[in-house]
Length: 177
Image (cartoon, one colour):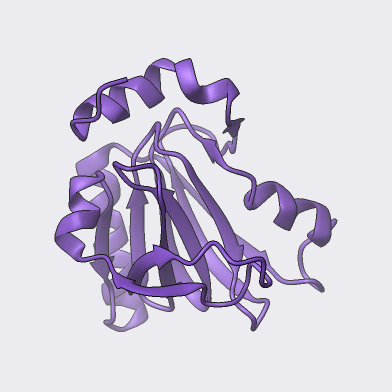
């Protein structure tokens, strides 16, 4: 896992966009982001996922394959994923294959880019503005974890600015709203 400030250039969203300013794990934790590296064998990784599900009361999971040939309406969906939004539930993703980027807003409303690759497990808190895109390989396979039935309900900016989960997230990281 690698994280840094996004360079805000107009280049393809799938490029690195590395500003050269690193963002540490401590800084990510300060935003409510949790990261785990699962680099065991398949059985060990699944056991770690099971333990996480028990700890956080997650009941369901699915797998998503994102690539131009595997995801119906790929172009439309990749644009939706890259639109700035929040969720009212935390988002847990375990990368099984491939790579992509989660961009999250920091305390100063700057984009922080997080590169996730095979073996990375990322927990994004409810209410944080974020977006997702693939890298230039155009492929990721990820396990998604859910507390209830699988759902993906984004609330886009600016509609989410007054959302109770977004306001609670800001409060939890020490940002006055």
